[in-house]
Image (cartoon, rainbow, N blue to C red):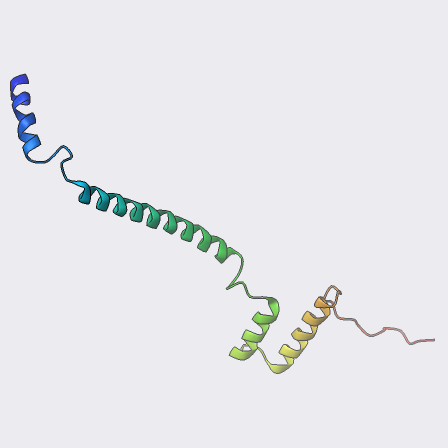
Length: 108
């Protein structure tokens, strides 16, 4: 068994199995390895960031942008648009967004 193995080693070396592929192939393989790992890492980062972007809401729109988009699509009426726009303006002005009701009792 040992003699057969000893005869196989020189035969394997003549087939170029032990590293005599030259500098050109080695440089090409290093370049391809860097491209592969760069693509793999970029894909993982892209997938993670895409997952976090989906949780923060659709396209990162503000409330006013969503309102304007829905109005432009015809999803809400003109009256709804103006009412909701006023609520957003009140909220931006420092109030909590609640409408002020009229006084319930007659003044004295």
